Length: 165
Image 1 (cartoon, helix red, strand yellow):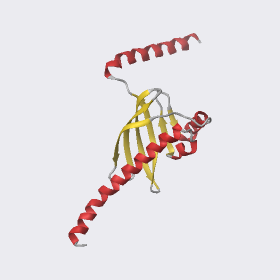
Image 2: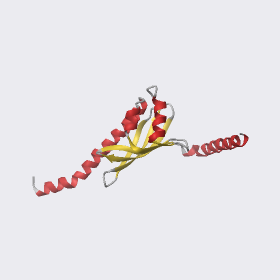
Image 3: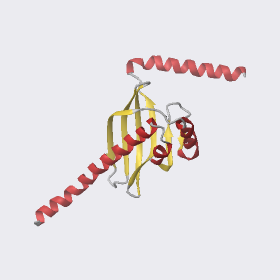
Image 4: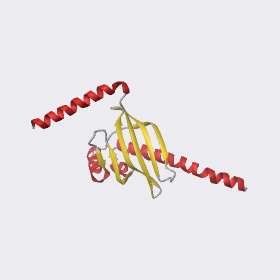
């Protein structure tokens, strides 16, 4: 190989590694969702870093993997089923260091419709792990006012309940 070919290959390598990493990240996230659909607690939690956090759709749902989320997942997966979401669109960005990645995805659930998932992954010992995952409902702009009003009513009922107890 001549010097020009070697230089070209050296310049191309970071882009090839990034593409391979993006594919590997996609596999991790897809398997994370598949493990949940099949109630496979060990496989599901195994995709998270030890200090990983899962942010659910309710305002209080901030689940550190140890021990709160692991406990919750154990209960939800005990019958061999959890929740089923399928990614229908995903964007991945990898930091220049090649050790951190961010993603966002649109998920689909036959039961509940569309959601957004966002997250951060860390490369640990050559393997991508989910350090942070956040799930949120997608609200169409034309439904925003109705959702706000519903939330206000729910909060008002909670305050009223707190006062009467």
